[in-house]
View 1 (cartoon, rainbow, N blue to C red):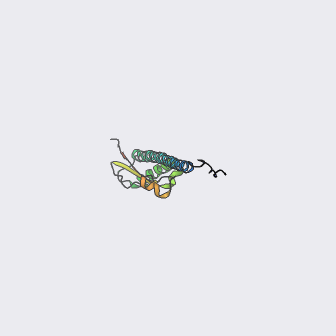
View 2: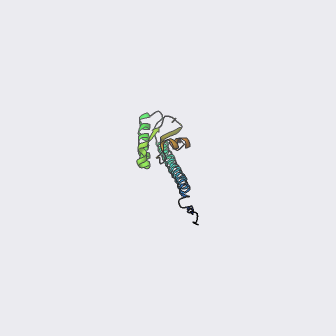
View 3: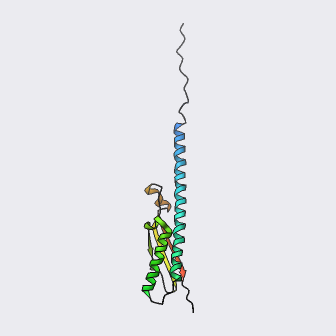
Length: 142
């Protein structure tokens, strides 16, 4: 009598491949989100610091009341220093001095953050825009 044909035992080789690929993909996605968060926090911090410095320069500048040309020169000087402080990122921001009054200087800086995420993902998390306003009170000597 002939022996019945024996079937080969099934191998488990490659069974965890899809799980490993999914795990590595999720890990890399979280790593990318963490990098985007750190870059965003750094950019917001740098813009906030530079905006305060610019507003402080204008607030400390001595000019007569209603002397708009002197105030404009002080704002231009402060804006140049802020742009130098921000480096290459300065080309991506705009400055707005319109909220300034006789008693206080306000500098609003708006721009886009550098991105590492896909275009649709960062906007939902609030990582796409920077909008900071620095208010500094003017002090006049009497």
